[in-house]
Length: 124
View (tube, one colour):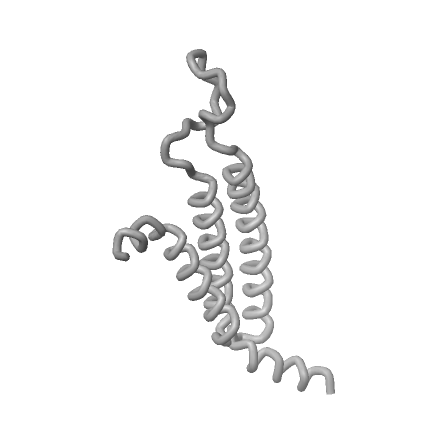
């Protein structure tokens, strides 16, 4: 039983990262903590994809003269998805941080409820 847990430790870690990030994203009212939760969710997804695409006895998908069968290589699609996801995740995080800075400059708070209340008061 314990060996099965150790054999899937990377997947369990990915699920734990995603769960912690999702909890932060849903339950915390601080915008910075929400951004951190979003980044943790991203990291969990990337770890899961990378661990899913790894096969123990196969080679990296780089041309080698002595190997001619495609079954000797790991599928490069998960690695490509992870790299693309990292680029998109960094861009989205940068936009979220920029918007958070602007909200803080205008409302002097990072609490979502305080910001929403100040917006409601401005509208009246």
